[in-house]
Length: 334
Image (cartoon, rainbow, N blue to C red; front, side, top):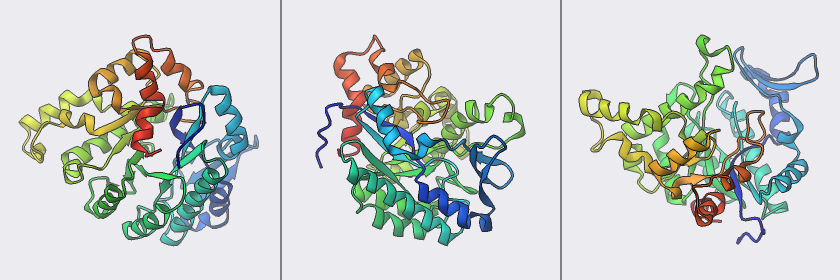
Protein backbone atom coordinates (compact mmCIF):
# COMPACT_ATOMS: atom_id res chain seq x y z
CA UNK A 1 0.00 0.00 0.00
CA UNK A 2 1.33 3.43 -0.92
CA UNK A 3 1.30 5.95 1.90
CA UNK A 4 -0.55 9.10 0.92
CA UNK A 5 -0.42 11.10 4.14
CA UNK A 6 0.83 14.63 3.39
CA UNK A 7 3.21 14.62 6.35
CA UNK A 8 6.10 12.55 5.01
CA UNK A 9 7.54 11.87 8.44
CA UNK A 10 7.81 8.66 10.42
CA UNK A 11 8.93 7.97 13.98
CA UNK A 12 10.48 4.49 14.05
CA UNK A 13 10.93 4.28 17.83
CA UNK A 14 7.52 4.50 19.48
CA UNK A 15 6.07 2.14 22.07
CA UNK A 16 2.58 0.72 22.33
CA UNK A 17 0.76 -1.47 24.84
CA UNK A 18 -2.48 -2.91 23.45
CA UNK A 19 -5.08 -3.34 26.18
CA UNK A 20 -5.31 -7.07 25.41
CA UNK A 21 -1.57 -7.49 26.07
CA UNK A 22 -2.00 -5.90 29.50
CA UNK A 23 -5.14 -7.93 30.20
CA UNK A 24 -3.37 -11.19 29.36
CA UNK A 25 -0.57 -10.36 31.79
CA UNK A 26 -3.10 -9.47 34.48
CA UNK A 27 -4.99 -12.73 33.94
CA UNK A 28 -2.20 -15.23 33.38
CA UNK A 29 1.13 -13.57 34.15
CA UNK A 30 1.27 -14.50 37.81
CA UNK A 31 2.11 -18.12 36.98
CA UNK A 32 5.31 -16.79 35.38
CA UNK A 33 6.09 -14.29 38.14
CA UNK A 34 4.71 -11.23 36.34
CA UNK A 35 1.80 -9.03 37.41
CA UNK A 36 0.07 -5.77 36.60
CA UNK A 37 0.29 -3.66 39.74
CA UNK A 38 -1.09 -0.31 40.86
CA UNK A 39 0.72 1.75 43.49
CA UNK A 40 -0.84 3.87 46.23
CA UNK A 41 -1.06 6.81 43.81
CA UNK A 42 -3.11 4.83 41.31
CA UNK A 43 -0.23 4.46 38.84
CA UNK A 44 -0.05 1.18 36.90
CA UNK A 45 3.13 -0.83 36.26
CA UNK A 46 4.06 -4.24 34.86
CA UNK A 47 6.17 -6.02 37.47
CA UNK A 48 8.43 -8.90 36.41
CA UNK A 49 9.83 -10.71 39.41
CA UNK A 50 11.42 -8.49 42.03
CA UNK A 51 13.71 -6.35 39.92
CA UNK A 52 12.11 -5.32 36.61
CA UNK A 53 9.27 -2.81 36.62
CA UNK A 54 7.94 -1.13 33.47
CA UNK A 55 5.91 2.03 33.64
CA UNK A 56 4.11 4.01 34.55
CA UNK A 57 1.71 2.62 31.96
CA UNK A 58 0.08 5.93 31.12
CA UNK A 59 -2.91 6.24 28.81
CA UNK A 60 -0.80 7.47 25.90
CA UNK A 61 0.77 4.01 25.61
CA UNK A 62 -2.66 2.47 24.96
CA UNK A 63 -4.96 5.13 23.49
CA UNK A 64 -4.32 5.45 19.75
CA UNK A 65 -6.80 8.31 19.31
CA UNK A 66 -4.87 10.42 21.79
CA UNK A 67 -1.65 9.34 20.10
CA UNK A 68 -2.93 10.64 16.76
CA UNK A 69 -3.63 14.03 18.31
CA UNK A 70 -0.09 14.16 19.69
CA UNK A 71 1.35 13.07 16.33
CA UNK A 72 -0.57 15.84 14.57
CA UNK A 73 0.74 18.38 17.04
CA UNK A 74 4.30 17.13 16.47
CA UNK A 75 3.95 17.16 12.70
CA UNK A 76 4.38 13.40 12.50
CA UNK A 77 2.62 11.51 9.76
CA UNK A 78 3.32 7.97 10.96
CA UNK A 79 4.32 5.90 13.98
CA UNK A 80 5.98 2.51 13.80
CA UNK A 81 4.44 0.74 16.79
CA UNK A 82 6.62 -1.53 18.89
CA UNK A 83 6.47 -3.27 22.22
CA UNK A 84 9.02 -2.44 24.90
CA UNK A 85 10.21 -4.11 28.06
CA UNK A 86 9.20 -6.43 29.60
CA UNK A 87 8.54 -7.86 26.10
CA UNK A 88 7.36 -11.50 26.35
CA UNK A 89 10.50 -13.49 27.14
CA UNK A 90 9.60 -13.92 30.82
CA UNK A 91 6.49 -15.92 29.85
CA UNK A 92 6.09 -19.65 29.28
CA UNK A 93 5.60 -20.88 25.72
CA UNK A 94 1.81 -20.73 25.72
CA UNK A 95 1.49 -17.29 27.26
CA UNK A 96 4.43 -15.96 25.24
CA UNK A 97 2.68 -16.94 22.03
CA UNK A 98 -0.64 -15.47 23.19
CA UNK A 99 1.04 -12.17 24.06
CA UNK A 100 2.82 -11.97 20.70
CA UNK A 101 -0.33 -12.76 18.76
CA UNK A 102 -2.32 -10.20 20.74
CA UNK A 103 0.29 -7.53 20.09
CA UNK A 104 0.80 -8.32 16.42
CA UNK A 105 -2.94 -8.47 15.76
CA UNK A 106 -3.42 -5.14 17.55
CA UNK A 107 -0.85 -3.26 15.49
CA UNK A 108 -2.25 -4.75 12.29
CA UNK A 109 -5.72 -3.62 13.34
CA UNK A 110 -4.36 -0.14 14.02
CA UNK A 111 -2.84 -0.10 10.54
CA UNK A 112 -6.07 -1.23 8.91
CA UNK A 113 -7.99 1.50 10.70
CA UNK A 114 -5.38 4.19 9.97
CA UNK A 115 -3.25 2.82 7.09
CA UNK A 116 -1.36 6.05 6.53
CA UNK A 117 -0.62 6.65 10.23
CA UNK A 118 0.40 3.33 11.80
CA UNK A 119 2.63 0.41 10.90
CA UNK A 120 4.30 -1.96 13.33
CA UNK A 121 7.12 -4.32 14.23
CA UNK A 122 6.11 -7.87 15.10
CA UNK A 123 6.94 -9.27 18.50
CA UNK A 124 8.10 -12.91 18.51
CA UNK A 125 8.49 -15.41 21.39
CA UNK A 126 12.26 -15.65 20.97
CA UNK A 127 12.57 -17.66 24.21
CA UNK A 128 11.44 -20.54 21.98
CA UNK A 129 12.93 -19.96 18.50
CA UNK A 130 10.72 -22.66 16.96
CA UNK A 131 7.63 -20.78 18.10
CA UNK A 132 9.25 -17.52 17.01
CA UNK A 133 9.50 -18.91 13.49
CA UNK A 134 5.89 -20.04 13.63
CA UNK A 135 4.64 -16.63 14.69
CA UNK A 136 6.93 -14.90 12.19
CA UNK A 137 5.26 -16.78 9.34
CA UNK A 138 1.83 -15.77 10.59
CA UNK A 139 2.65 -12.17 11.47
CA UNK A 140 4.51 -11.49 8.22
CA UNK A 141 1.20 -11.90 6.39
CA UNK A 142 -0.63 -9.36 8.54
CA UNK A 143 -1.25 -5.94 6.97
CA UNK A 144 1.01 -3.29 8.45
CA UNK A 145 3.79 -5.56 9.74
CA UNK A 146 7.00 -4.03 8.40
CA UNK A 147 9.70 -5.46 10.65
CA UNK A 148 10.51 -7.51 13.73
CA UNK A 149 11.22 -6.25 17.22
CA UNK A 150 13.79 -7.99 19.40
CA UNK A 151 15.46 -7.28 22.70
CA UNK A 152 19.22 -6.95 23.03
CA UNK A 153 19.25 -10.29 24.86
CA UNK A 154 16.70 -13.06 25.36
CA UNK A 155 16.80 -14.37 28.90
CA UNK A 156 20.39 -15.64 29.20
CA UNK A 157 21.07 -15.84 25.45
CA UNK A 158 22.97 -13.27 23.43
CA UNK A 159 21.84 -12.35 19.92
CA UNK A 160 24.76 -14.37 18.56
CA UNK A 161 23.18 -17.58 19.87
CA UNK A 162 22.86 -20.10 17.06
CA UNK A 163 19.27 -20.91 18.03
CA UNK A 164 18.24 -17.52 16.60
CA UNK A 165 19.94 -17.96 13.23
CA UNK A 166 16.98 -19.72 11.54
CA UNK A 167 14.82 -16.73 12.52
CA UNK A 168 17.41 -14.33 11.12
CA UNK A 169 17.51 -16.35 7.91
CA UNK A 170 13.75 -16.15 7.50
CA UNK A 171 13.63 -12.42 8.33
CA UNK A 172 16.25 -11.83 5.65
CA UNK A 173 14.25 -13.85 3.12
CA UNK A 174 11.08 -11.94 3.99
CA UNK A 175 12.84 -8.58 3.77
CA UNK A 176 11.89 -7.70 7.35
CA UNK A 177 14.46 -5.62 9.27
CA UNK A 178 15.05 -6.33 12.95
CA UNK A 179 14.76 -3.40 15.34
CA UNK A 180 16.52 -3.87 18.67
CA UNK A 181 15.70 -2.50 22.11
CA UNK A 182 17.57 -2.82 25.42
CA UNK A 183 16.04 -4.69 28.34
CA UNK A 184 17.69 -2.75 31.19
CA UNK A 185 20.89 -4.05 32.79
CA UNK A 186 20.13 -4.88 36.43
CA UNK A 187 23.17 -3.95 38.45
CA UNK A 188 23.53 -2.46 41.91
CA UNK A 189 25.82 0.29 40.60
CA UNK A 190 23.07 1.54 38.25
CA UNK A 191 20.21 1.83 40.72
CA UNK A 192 20.87 5.45 41.64
CA UNK A 193 20.33 8.51 39.46
CA UNK A 194 18.38 6.59 36.76
CA UNK A 195 21.72 5.18 35.57
CA UNK A 196 19.99 1.91 34.69
CA UNK A 197 18.62 3.82 31.70
CA UNK A 198 21.12 6.64 31.18
CA UNK A 199 24.17 4.34 31.20
CA UNK A 200 22.74 0.82 31.15
CA UNK A 201 20.68 1.08 27.98
CA UNK A 202 23.41 2.56 25.75
CA UNK A 203 25.94 -0.08 26.81
CA UNK A 204 23.38 -2.87 26.53
CA UNK A 205 22.86 -1.88 22.89
CA UNK A 206 26.62 -1.78 22.29
CA UNK A 207 27.03 -5.25 23.79
CA UNK A 208 24.28 -6.68 21.57
CA UNK A 209 25.73 -5.07 18.43
CA UNK A 210 29.19 -6.37 19.32
CA UNK A 211 27.85 -9.90 19.58
CA UNK A 212 26.24 -9.54 16.15
CA UNK A 213 29.54 -8.33 14.69
CA UNK A 214 32.04 -10.70 16.31
CA UNK A 215 29.82 -13.79 15.98
CA UNK A 216 29.54 -13.43 12.21
CA UNK A 217 25.78 -12.87 12.15
CA UNK A 218 26.18 -9.82 9.92
CA UNK A 219 28.41 -11.76 7.54
CA UNK A 220 26.09 -14.77 7.46
CA UNK A 221 23.05 -12.63 6.62
CA UNK A 222 24.37 -9.78 4.48
CA UNK A 223 20.92 -8.53 3.42
CA UNK A 224 19.41 -8.55 6.91
CA UNK A 225 19.08 -5.07 8.39
CA UNK A 226 19.47 -4.45 12.14
CA UNK A 227 18.39 -1.10 13.55
CA UNK A 228 19.93 0.17 16.79
CA UNK A 229 17.98 2.33 19.25
CA UNK A 230 19.23 5.45 21.01
CA UNK A 231 21.56 6.30 18.11
CA UNK A 232 23.47 3.05 18.59
CA UNK A 233 24.03 3.64 22.28
CA UNK A 234 27.71 3.41 23.17
CA UNK A 235 28.67 1.41 20.07
CA UNK A 236 30.20 4.20 18.01
CA UNK A 237 32.06 5.59 21.01
CA UNK A 238 33.91 2.33 21.62
CA UNK A 239 34.62 1.50 17.97
CA UNK A 240 38.35 2.05 18.41
CA UNK A 241 38.44 -0.25 21.40
CA UNK A 242 36.55 -2.95 19.50
CA UNK A 243 39.05 -2.66 16.65
CA UNK A 244 41.97 -2.88 19.07
CA UNK A 245 40.58 -6.15 20.36
CA UNK A 246 40.28 -7.44 16.81
CA UNK A 247 43.93 -6.67 16.07
CA UNK A 248 45.44 -7.84 19.36
CA UNK A 249 43.26 -10.53 20.97
CA UNK A 250 43.00 -14.07 19.56
CA UNK A 251 39.40 -14.49 20.76
CA UNK A 252 38.39 -11.47 18.66
CA UNK A 253 39.77 -12.84 15.39
CA UNK A 254 36.43 -14.33 14.39
CA UNK A 255 35.78 -11.99 11.47
CA UNK A 256 37.84 -10.93 8.46
CA UNK A 257 37.70 -7.16 8.94
CA UNK A 258 37.68 -4.80 11.93
CA UNK A 259 34.44 -4.20 13.83
CA UNK A 260 34.28 -0.52 12.90
CA UNK A 261 33.81 -1.52 9.27
CA UNK A 262 30.41 -2.96 10.24
CA UNK A 263 29.00 0.31 11.60
CA UNK A 264 27.27 1.05 8.30
CA UNK A 265 25.52 -2.33 8.45
CA UNK A 266 23.25 -0.88 11.13
CA UNK A 267 20.68 1.87 10.97
CA UNK A 268 20.38 4.27 13.89
CA UNK A 269 17.63 6.45 15.28
CA UNK A 270 18.05 10.11 16.18
CA UNK A 271 17.77 9.71 19.95
CA UNK A 272 21.04 11.38 20.96
CA UNK A 273 19.69 14.32 23.01
CA UNK A 274 22.60 16.23 21.46
CA UNK A 275 22.69 17.96 18.09
CA UNK A 276 26.49 17.72 17.99
CA UNK A 277 26.35 13.98 18.65
CA UNK A 278 23.76 13.49 15.92
CA UNK A 279 25.96 15.38 13.45
CA UNK A 280 28.94 13.20 14.42
CA UNK A 281 26.89 10.05 13.91
CA UNK A 282 25.82 11.21 10.45
CA UNK A 283 29.43 11.87 9.48
CA UNK A 284 30.46 8.45 10.75
CA UNK A 285 27.78 6.18 9.22
CA UNK A 286 26.19 8.33 6.51
CA UNK A 287 22.94 10.21 6.21
CA UNK A 288 21.24 7.19 4.63
CA UNK A 289 21.56 5.18 7.87
CA UNK A 290 19.65 7.59 10.13
CA UNK A 291 15.96 7.29 11.09
CA UNK A 292 13.73 9.43 13.28
CA UNK A 293 13.16 8.10 16.80
CA UNK A 294 11.56 9.59 19.88
CA UNK A 295 11.04 6.80 22.50
CA UNK A 296 7.36 7.75 22.73
CA UNK A 297 5.89 7.96 25.27
CA UNK A 298 8.36 7.55 28.13
CA UNK A 299 9.17 10.68 30.12
CA UNK A 300 12.69 10.69 28.65
CA UNK A 301 11.31 10.74 25.08
CA UNK A 302 11.77 13.55 22.58
CA UNK A 303 8.69 15.74 22.63
CA UNK A 304 9.42 17.27 19.20
CA UNK A 305 11.29 14.68 17.09
CA UNK A 306 10.53 16.42 13.78
CA UNK A 307 11.54 19.82 15.11
CA UNK A 308 14.82 18.31 16.27
CA UNK A 309 15.77 17.18 12.75
CA UNK A 310 14.59 20.37 11.09
CA UNK A 311 16.65 22.37 13.55
CA UNK A 312 20.01 20.83 12.58
CA UNK A 313 21.52 23.72 10.59
CA UNK A 314 24.24 21.65 8.96
CA UNK A 315 21.69 19.49 7.10
CA UNK A 316 20.26 20.36 3.71
CA UNK A 317 16.52 20.11 3.04
CA UNK A 318 17.15 16.93 1.07
CA UNK A 319 19.10 15.38 3.96
CA UNK A 320 16.37 16.28 6.42
CA UNK A 321 13.82 14.60 4.16
CA UNK A 322 16.00 11.50 4.12
CA UNK A 323 15.96 11.27 7.90
CA UNK A 324 12.33 12.28 8.34
CA UNK A 325 10.91 9.86 5.76
CA UNK A 326 12.94 8.55 2.82
CA UNK A 327 15.38 6.30 4.68
CA UNK A 328 12.67 4.57 6.66
CA UNK A 329 10.36 4.37 3.65
CA UNK A 330 13.06 2.48 1.76
CA UNK A 331 13.97 0.22 4.69
CA UNK A 332 10.36 -0.62 5.53
CA UNK A 333 9.06 -0.81 1.98
CA UNK A 334 6.43 1.88 2.52
